[in-house]
Image (cartoon, rainbow, N blue to C red; front, side, top):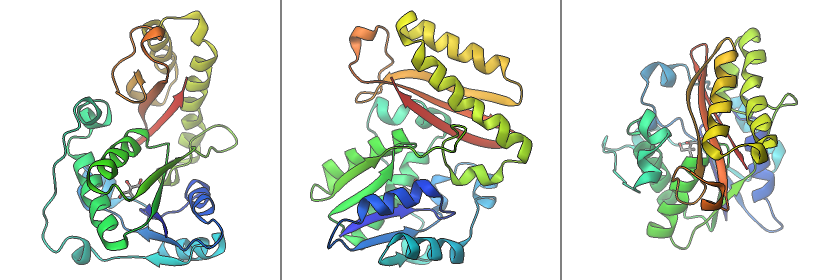
Length: 256
Ligand code: PAF
Protein backbone atom coordinates (compact mmCIF):
# COMPACT_ATOMS: atom_id res chain seq x y z
CA UNK A 1 0.00 0.00 0.00
CA UNK A 2 1.27 3.46 -0.91
CA UNK A 3 0.75 6.50 1.31
CA UNK A 4 0.76 10.21 0.49
CA UNK A 5 0.54 12.37 3.64
CA UNK A 6 -0.62 15.95 3.01
CA UNK A 7 -2.00 18.98 4.81
CA UNK A 8 -4.56 19.56 2.05
CA UNK A 9 -5.01 22.62 -0.20
CA UNK A 10 -3.84 20.21 -2.87
CA UNK A 11 -2.01 21.34 -6.01
CA UNK A 12 -0.32 19.61 -8.93
CA UNK A 13 2.69 18.83 -6.75
CA UNK A 14 0.50 16.66 -4.49
CA UNK A 15 -1.23 15.12 -7.49
CA UNK A 16 2.16 14.13 -8.95
CA UNK A 17 2.79 12.20 -5.70
CA UNK A 18 -0.53 10.34 -6.05
CA UNK A 19 0.24 9.52 -9.70
CA UNK A 20 3.74 8.31 -8.76
CA UNK A 21 2.32 6.23 -5.89
CA UNK A 22 -0.37 4.66 -8.08
CA UNK A 23 1.33 1.67 -9.71
CA UNK A 24 -0.60 -1.33 -11.01
CA UNK A 25 -2.33 -3.14 -8.13
CA UNK A 26 -1.30 -0.47 -5.64
CA UNK A 27 -3.81 0.86 -3.18
CA UNK A 28 -3.12 4.55 -2.58
CA UNK A 29 -4.15 6.26 0.62
CA UNK A 30 -3.75 10.00 1.09
CA UNK A 31 -4.16 11.81 4.39
CA UNK A 32 -5.29 15.38 4.85
CA UNK A 33 -4.43 16.74 8.26
CA UNK A 34 -3.31 20.28 9.10
CA UNK A 35 -0.86 19.39 11.83
CA UNK A 36 -0.87 22.05 14.57
CA UNK A 37 2.37 20.91 16.22
CA UNK A 38 4.54 21.75 13.19
CA UNK A 39 3.47 25.41 13.03
CA UNK A 40 5.69 27.65 15.11
CA UNK A 41 3.74 30.72 14.04
CA UNK A 42 0.08 30.73 15.21
CA UNK A 43 -0.95 33.10 12.41
CA UNK A 44 0.53 30.70 9.79
CA UNK A 45 -1.62 27.88 11.26
CA UNK A 46 -4.71 30.10 11.37
CA UNK A 47 -4.29 31.18 7.73
CA UNK A 48 -3.32 27.78 6.35
CA UNK A 49 -5.73 27.18 3.43
CA UNK A 50 -8.41 24.53 4.04
CA UNK A 51 -10.65 23.16 1.25
CA UNK A 52 -11.48 19.57 2.05
CA UNK A 53 -14.29 18.99 -0.46
CA UNK A 54 -12.23 20.27 -3.37
CA UNK A 55 -9.24 18.23 -2.16
CA UNK A 56 -11.26 15.01 -1.99
CA UNK A 57 -12.54 15.54 -5.55
CA UNK A 58 -8.96 16.09 -6.77
CA UNK A 59 -7.77 12.94 -4.99
CA UNK A 60 -10.55 10.87 -6.56
CA UNK A 61 -9.75 12.21 -10.01
CA UNK A 62 -6.05 11.40 -9.56
CA UNK A 63 -6.84 7.76 -8.74
CA UNK A 64 -6.42 7.85 -4.96
CA UNK A 65 -8.32 4.97 -3.35
CA UNK A 66 -8.73 6.16 0.24
CA UNK A 67 -8.75 9.63 1.76
CA UNK A 68 -7.88 9.64 5.47
CA UNK A 69 -9.00 12.80 7.31
CA UNK A 70 -8.34 12.21 10.99
CA UNK A 71 -9.51 14.65 13.65
CA UNK A 72 -7.19 16.51 16.00
CA UNK A 73 -8.32 14.35 18.94
CA UNK A 74 -7.65 11.14 16.98
CA UNK A 75 -4.09 12.16 16.13
CA UNK A 76 -3.42 13.94 19.43
CA UNK A 77 -5.32 12.13 22.21
CA UNK A 78 -2.73 13.86 24.40
CA UNK A 79 -0.86 16.97 23.27
CA UNK A 80 2.53 15.27 23.47
CA UNK A 81 5.13 16.23 20.87
CA UNK A 82 8.23 14.05 20.44
CA UNK A 83 11.81 15.20 20.04
CA UNK A 84 14.40 14.06 17.52
CA UNK A 85 17.94 15.36 17.20
CA UNK A 86 19.61 14.37 13.95
CA UNK A 87 22.56 16.74 14.46
CA UNK A 88 23.17 19.29 11.73
CA UNK A 89 20.17 18.02 9.79
CA UNK A 90 17.91 19.12 12.66
CA UNK A 91 19.77 22.23 13.85
CA UNK A 92 20.47 23.99 10.54
CA UNK A 93 18.33 26.07 8.17
CA UNK A 94 14.61 25.28 8.81
CA UNK A 95 15.66 23.74 12.15
CA UNK A 96 17.31 27.01 13.16
CA UNK A 97 14.61 29.37 11.89
CA UNK A 98 11.59 27.26 12.86
CA UNK A 99 12.44 25.80 16.27
CA UNK A 100 10.35 22.71 17.03
CA UNK A 101 9.03 22.46 13.45
CA UNK A 102 10.66 19.13 12.61
CA UNK A 103 9.63 17.67 15.99
CA UNK A 104 6.04 18.48 15.00
CA UNK A 105 6.47 17.00 11.51
CA UNK A 106 8.06 13.80 12.81
CA UNK A 107 5.48 13.46 15.59
CA UNK A 108 2.62 13.45 13.08
CA UNK A 109 4.45 11.39 10.42
CA UNK A 110 5.23 8.76 13.07
CA UNK A 111 1.57 8.65 14.16
CA UNK A 112 0.38 8.50 10.54
CA UNK A 113 2.86 5.71 9.73
CA UNK A 114 1.59 3.80 12.79
CA UNK A 115 -2.05 4.31 11.78
CA UNK A 116 -1.65 3.53 8.06
CA UNK A 117 1.28 1.03 8.00
CA UNK A 118 2.17 1.66 4.36
CA UNK A 119 4.82 -0.17 2.32
CA UNK A 120 5.88 3.04 0.61
CA UNK A 121 5.37 6.73 1.45
CA UNK A 122 5.75 9.65 -0.95
CA UNK A 123 6.91 13.20 -0.17
CA UNK A 124 7.92 16.19 -2.30
CA UNK A 125 11.53 17.31 -2.63
CA UNK A 126 10.44 20.94 -2.22
CA UNK A 127 10.54 20.31 1.54
CA UNK A 128 14.01 18.86 1.14
CA UNK A 129 15.07 19.04 4.80
CA UNK A 130 11.72 17.57 5.87
CA UNK A 131 12.22 14.69 3.42
CA UNK A 132 15.71 14.04 4.86
CA UNK A 133 14.21 13.92 8.38
CA UNK A 134 11.46 11.52 7.33
CA UNK A 135 13.97 9.23 5.55
CA UNK A 136 16.02 9.14 8.75
CA UNK A 137 12.92 8.48 10.89
CA UNK A 138 11.91 5.59 8.61
CA UNK A 139 15.43 4.15 8.59
CA UNK A 140 15.60 4.16 12.40
CA UNK A 141 12.00 3.51 13.47
CA UNK A 142 10.07 2.13 10.45
CA UNK A 143 12.62 0.11 8.43
CA UNK A 144 9.87 -1.65 6.46
CA UNK A 145 8.56 1.63 5.01
CA UNK A 146 10.29 2.90 1.88
CA UNK A 147 10.29 6.72 1.76
CA UNK A 148 10.31 8.09 -1.77
CA UNK A 149 11.13 11.71 -2.66
CA UNK A 150 9.51 13.16 -5.79
CA UNK A 151 10.71 16.17 -7.82
CA UNK A 152 9.35 19.65 -7.09
CA UNK A 153 6.57 20.66 -9.46
CA UNK A 154 6.83 24.27 -10.67
CA UNK A 155 4.45 26.84 -12.12
CA UNK A 156 5.26 27.99 -15.68
CA UNK A 157 7.29 30.92 -14.31
CA UNK A 158 9.34 28.59 -12.10
CA UNK A 159 7.65 29.20 -8.73
CA UNK A 160 7.67 25.97 -6.72
CA UNK A 161 4.10 24.80 -6.13
CA UNK A 162 3.04 25.22 -2.51
CA UNK A 163 -0.28 25.48 -0.71
CA UNK A 164 1.03 28.75 0.74
CA UNK A 165 1.13 30.30 -2.77
CA UNK A 166 -2.67 30.66 -2.42
CA UNK A 167 -2.05 33.31 0.24
CA UNK A 168 -0.06 35.57 -2.13
CA UNK A 169 -1.73 38.64 -3.62
CA UNK A 170 -1.53 38.98 -7.43
CA UNK A 171 1.42 41.36 -7.05
CA UNK A 172 3.18 39.10 -4.53
CA UNK A 173 2.58 36.07 -6.76
CA UNK A 174 4.58 37.79 -9.54
CA UNK A 175 7.37 38.74 -7.13
CA UNK A 176 7.54 35.19 -5.74
CA UNK A 177 8.80 33.87 -9.09
CA UNK A 178 12.07 35.72 -8.44
CA UNK A 179 13.02 33.09 -5.84
CA UNK A 180 13.36 30.25 -8.34
CA UNK A 181 14.78 32.61 -11.00
CA UNK A 182 17.68 33.39 -8.63
CA UNK A 183 18.21 29.69 -7.91
CA UNK A 184 18.33 28.76 -11.60
CA UNK A 185 20.65 31.71 -12.31
CA UNK A 186 22.98 30.54 -9.51
CA UNK A 187 23.04 27.01 -10.95
CA UNK A 188 24.09 28.36 -14.34
CA UNK A 189 26.92 30.33 -12.72
CA UNK A 190 28.23 27.47 -10.58
CA UNK A 191 31.37 26.99 -12.68
CA UNK A 192 32.35 30.66 -12.31
CA UNK A 193 32.35 30.79 -8.51
CA UNK A 194 33.44 29.06 -5.30
CA UNK A 195 30.46 27.93 -3.16
CA UNK A 196 30.74 30.92 -0.80
CA UNK A 197 31.07 33.34 -3.74
CA UNK A 198 28.00 31.76 -5.32
CA UNK A 199 26.08 32.15 -2.03
CA UNK A 200 27.11 35.82 -1.82
CA UNK A 201 26.06 36.31 -5.43
CA UNK A 202 22.66 34.72 -4.73
CA UNK A 203 22.15 36.80 -1.56
CA UNK A 204 23.04 39.99 -3.46
CA UNK A 205 20.41 39.13 -6.07
CA UNK A 206 17.82 38.87 -3.27
CA UNK A 207 18.93 42.26 -1.91
CA UNK A 208 18.32 43.79 -5.35
CA UNK A 209 14.81 42.29 -5.56
CA UNK A 210 12.13 44.46 -3.98
CA UNK A 211 9.26 42.84 -2.10
CA UNK A 212 11.28 39.79 -0.98
CA UNK A 213 12.94 39.40 2.40
CA UNK A 214 15.55 36.63 2.37
CA UNK A 215 15.70 34.54 5.53
CA UNK A 216 18.51 32.18 4.52
CA UNK A 217 20.31 31.02 1.42
CA UNK A 218 22.92 28.30 1.84
CA UNK A 219 24.73 25.72 -0.22
CA UNK A 220 24.99 22.48 1.74
CA UNK A 221 25.69 18.83 1.07
CA UNK A 222 22.47 16.92 0.35
CA UNK A 223 23.40 14.03 2.66
CA UNK A 224 25.13 15.71 5.61
CA UNK A 225 23.66 19.23 5.44
CA UNK A 226 27.21 20.50 6.10
CA UNK A 227 27.97 23.85 4.43
CA UNK A 228 29.97 23.29 1.24
CA UNK A 229 33.26 25.22 1.45
CA UNK A 230 34.77 23.78 -1.71
CA UNK A 231 33.05 22.06 -4.66
CA UNK A 232 35.44 19.12 -4.12
CA UNK A 233 33.86 18.59 -0.64
CA UNK A 234 30.46 17.53 -1.95
CA UNK A 235 29.33 15.42 -4.87
CA UNK A 236 25.73 16.44 -4.22
CA UNK A 237 25.49 20.13 -3.28
CA UNK A 238 22.12 21.81 -3.02
CA UNK A 239 21.04 25.44 -2.58
CA UNK A 240 18.34 25.82 0.06
CA UNK A 241 16.45 29.06 0.48
CA UNK A 242 13.67 30.58 2.61
CA UNK A 243 12.24 34.02 1.93
CA UNK A 244 9.23 36.11 2.84
CA UNK A 245 7.03 37.64 0.17
CA UNK A 246 4.76 39.94 2.16
CA UNK A 247 3.75 37.86 5.18
CA UNK A 248 4.05 34.53 3.34
CA UNK A 249 7.13 32.44 4.02
CA UNK A 250 8.22 30.39 1.02
CA UNK A 251 10.98 27.79 0.71
CA UNK A 252 12.66 26.36 -2.37
CA UNK A 253 15.82 24.48 -3.32
CA UNK A 254 17.84 23.46 -6.32
CA UNK A 255 20.34 20.63 -6.68
CA UNK A 256 23.54 21.89 -8.22
O1 PAF B 1 4.63 18.32 3.82
C1 PAF B 1 3.53 18.33 4.44
O2 PAF B 1 2.48 18.56 3.87
C2 PAF B 1 3.52 18.06 5.92
O3 PAF B 1 4.65 18.59 6.54
C3 PAF B 1 3.35 16.57 6.27
C4 PAF B 1 4.52 15.74 5.80
C5 PAF B 1 2.05 16.05 5.66
C6 PAF B 1 3.26 16.40 7.80
O4 PAF B 1 2.22 17.15 8.34
